Length: 183
Image (cartoon, rainbow, N blue to C red):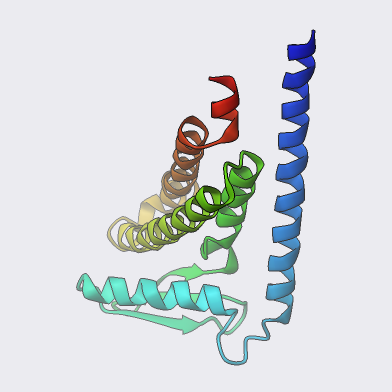
């Protein structure tokens, strides 16, 4: 009976920790977005940075690419060989996914140093894979424009969310206190 209560206690602690960290980081990110006026970096610094880095990667791969502010909405237009293919919106900058990732890791925290290092290295990996995802999506849209819905709604979201899931599984099995206390 005591081990059953301990299991529920761990689940409740995980859920509460996850929710508190997720809410705190999401609120902080919302404040960041609210105070990003877009005057220097449109629509906000992180979205602008992701769009510009995607442009640089596409140009390096030989695609004549321009990224320009969208005149009608807070996004950046991605134009390849004078064809408007996609837009980079706030949701494309990977910050929301990194918040989700970090919240889970904190909820299954190990010692502070290991947890912090894993969050930082995992966040960098998520950011880089997200950039590559945007580049590959743009190339796919350029080559196969009729497959837009499949690429954008199925294939490319699966890349980023499967990466996060694999990072979570690795963390739980290798570093978390949960692993140490139960196995």
